[in-house]
Length: 413
Image (tube, rainbow, N blue to C red; front, side, top):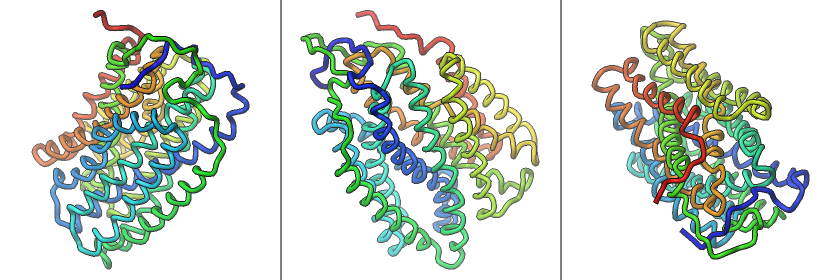
């Protein structure tokens, strides 16, 4: 993708303690994109009712949002290599702000395709943010604690996802009966202004100047490494694909699942508040995981958590009532560490290919577009509850990646 460098030591010349301010600043971004992404779980039942959609049509929301990751990630990686991490963050914030602003005309014209376009633009900005911020966090300190460090920042991402359902339930779903699609205008205008303000702040901040093409400050030689030559990176991309797809699927269908007569028969506005438990579990799990993985191998922790999710999904599929309801909600706790752990394990020992690898991994987030759409098709065909067998299959691969697939290895040429 670009002219890269020799195998890095994964240590910065500046002491990690001097990166505290940078890490705290970056954490605010993780909060914001978690908040915005989780609002899709509120938009889905809201727009499904407003436009009289079936499950497959409603899942186009996630298809357009996460489809942006596939289209934009690799170009975003090239952009970051040219302008650097900090300017990339500013660019991502401005694009995301523009996407949020697009909700106003979409609601005024009552046009579902315009909502989908606004979501795509919004997600393009979030993609640029992720391609900038995730590797930035991994290089601000020791490679040995990269999983722990990224998990900690992702915990604040989960704080955003924990707050968002209440925000959406009160300001979007509770107002939906009277204002229909237009109930999204106020919340998304507020988000647009907030993102624009953050862009100005990050433009003026003095963050560590890390060369995105040589993040660890190593001596450049003529060797050019490629992320495509690393098997654990490619398997990690599959892991990101199935994990994000499964997580988004579960979150997207939670409100509908809790509304089923054999589960909890909750109204949409009430069911939306229960999504908070799902994401709060992820937040708690990430704080605990960030500390635990200083002492426990990240791969083993990943495999254990994925195994627990398999058990909970089995219960949610096979039972009814409160047991099925709380089994599905409890999955958030064990999902907690999966994304940052898969991401950091996949980038382990990539050396000069780290930036390229980050772009590939962010492209794999397209799983959040494809798997929920397939889940929607299944739900329309065989029923909502049994359709959760699709994310169950996804977690089987994650167990494999944690136990074996994440071991660094190169593909023989």
